[in-house]
Image 1 (cartoon, helix red, strand yellow):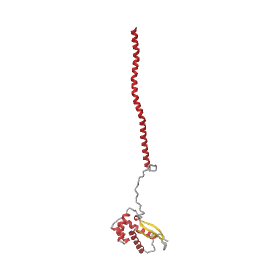
Image 2 (cartoon, rainbow, N blue to C red):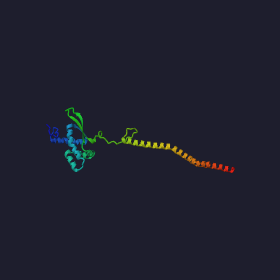
Image 3 (tube, helix red, strand yellow):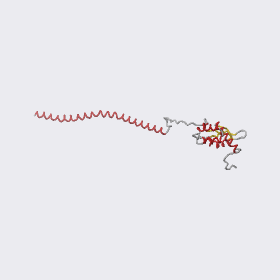
Image 4 (cartoon, helix red, strand yellow):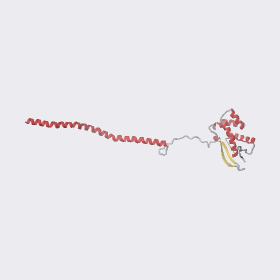
Length: 210
C-alpha cells in the first residue's frame, strides 16, 4: 500500500535518486527538452520547478542554493543568464509534459518534458486588436449607435432643408402681396372723396341755374 507516500522512489535509494534527478535537471536546462518516462518526468518537475523559482532572484545566496542541487557551474550560469529572464513573468508552471506513447522494449509510458517558454511553436504572441468597420449591421453596438445618430442628424437636416424650400415661395408671394394691399388701401380713400365731391358739384350747378 502507498498510504501517505508522497515521493516516488523510482526503484532507487535516496542518493541514487537525487543524483539521477540532478543529472536530468542539468540536461534539461542545457537542451531545454528531454525524453524520459512519465514517472521520472513527474519526479523531475517537482525537483526542478522550485529551483527555477529561486533563479528569478539573481543573488549570491540563490546561486549557491541552486548549485547545491545541480552541482554544475555551467548549468547554474545557463539557468540564471538565459532561462531566468524568460520565465520572469510566469507565476509557476515552467515545465510541460507531452506524452509520446509506450516504449517497445518494456512498454513503459514515455513522454517529452520541456521548458514552456522555449517552445517557439506553442508560444502564442499577443495579437494586436483591430477595430472592424463595416457598413452592414454586423458591427459592434457602438458602431450601430453612431450610425443611428448620424442617420438621425442627416434626416433632421433634410427635413429642415425641405421646410425651408417650401417656405421660400410663400415668403416671396407674401412680399409681392404686401405692396398690392398698400396700394388698395391708398386707392380706397380717393374713391370715397370723389363720391363725396360729385354731389356737391351738382348742387352748385343747380344753384346757378336757379
